[in-house]
Length: 113
Length: 115
Image 1 (cartoon, rainbow over the protein chains, first blue to last red):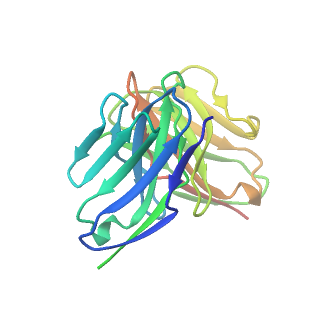
Image 2 (cartoon, rainbow over the protein chains, first blue to last red):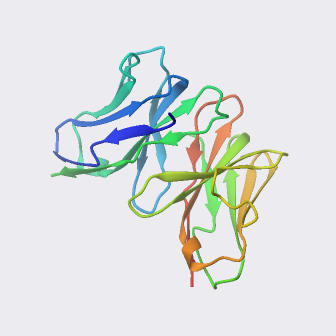
């Protein structure tokens, strides 16, 4: 199954809070899991990515948690700021997929001041 | 960071005409480039994958004669929408992957409006 399921569809968080977005997949051949941030009218920007050989990766306020056995991964945004308000997409790529990314449905994050 | 540019950023054309969109990797060589289409409030839909010097691979349901893709060099891919119709109006985004890498870096997108 090539799908990546993302939740929630939308999320409202207070400034300074933690934003959590979850993704789940079925295909065990997926071996690369990036997260992208997209502002209205712009292309997606690569935020952070993880491979299945680690369970967590942190870059600044952004952390990916990866659970290989549950086939789930999540993005945590610590100390969320109004400037983080954007749409976030998770994605997955199979190791023999020629780099093709399968995207989740997206989460619209709004951080209230 | 890796930079991908697209030109034009916006284009308005009349129904029946063709439009060419350019995608360039500015600071790396991209063996593979991808073209996506995105409707408002929706996810990215992969249209095709192109490898430098070979024919593009189109996703199921994407008309290859309507969406012509050329990947002439390691830094340039073009998408031509032929005989455009209003239903082709959308946000078209390209991405590029450096040789041997998993990462995909996206361009800023092109807003196509067909009147």
